[in-house]
Length: 387
Image 1 (cartoon, rainbow, N blue to C red):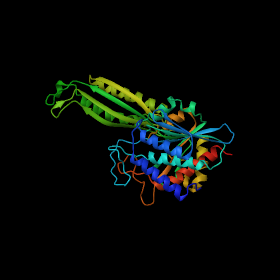
Image 2 (cartoon, rainbow, N blue to C red):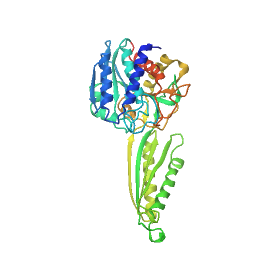
Image 3 (tube, one colour):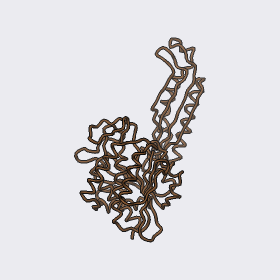
Image 4 (tube, rainbow, N blue to C red):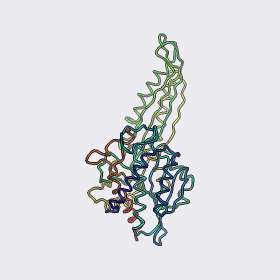
């Protein structure tokens, strides 16, 4: 299904590369929002800015039905110093589009232009969401009345994936991305001279034991078919080479698909840390925060998305039952409020372009997949809002 002329594709490629030059962090996407607004104005589609801070919502209605859907793209960047030598590399020091949000934004803008000439029956709200990377943008837009001001019956998202070949789309009816929870465990013992450990309550040894024991949660408490990850990622002390520390802080990250697994992880983690601290006479501080909910597609909307993908790029290029992944995405928060589907679009070209992993300083979105992304969005509107 072809919706882009060579001229349209060249225009969108230039737009994507212009967005790549001006990466901005969450809730700071001023230039990005302005460029989106300028593009929408040139297309002639009404839009509102400042939703949830720096979010933008455009609206296109046709026909007579009262049906409506939302299509969402994320617009923020990451605090990474770009390592490419591309002519359109980031002009913002220490900021980079290392997750392809510049490409997501471009594909959705391309779809809006294409849909001006495509018949459908209903209303489409195009959601350009800020601050996805730290999990606050979706909540901010919804708290600002996103679904009250722009009502939708279902909402859809799309993300590029370097492990997936260009020209392919993957999704599933169910959990597709994991929840992310963060934890902090602080053990307070009694520090002292490294030569006299018997006169201390060694917080280092206690904390090291906690780190090891936390790995039993996944190995021995979680159903292997449900999935979970516990990762200790920071180990901080107030000691020195000849000083046994008084305080040790463990920080980390857990992943899961099901709320009950998240609750189990928190409970077991707290019990393990408290038990080991008490056994050694140390004090414990424990905190556990749920940052991203799991992203769970609804079956009906996943079926709509799969049908649209097949129409757009062919059945041989669509995996409608892909395995889920433990990375997280705040689109899951929107799926708590509305049914919908989140899908992956391949980014890895035959020449290796687009194959660098996300959040890498050498990553670049593969412009060659822009037509596929536009075709998918257009097909999705035609499928969900048929004439």
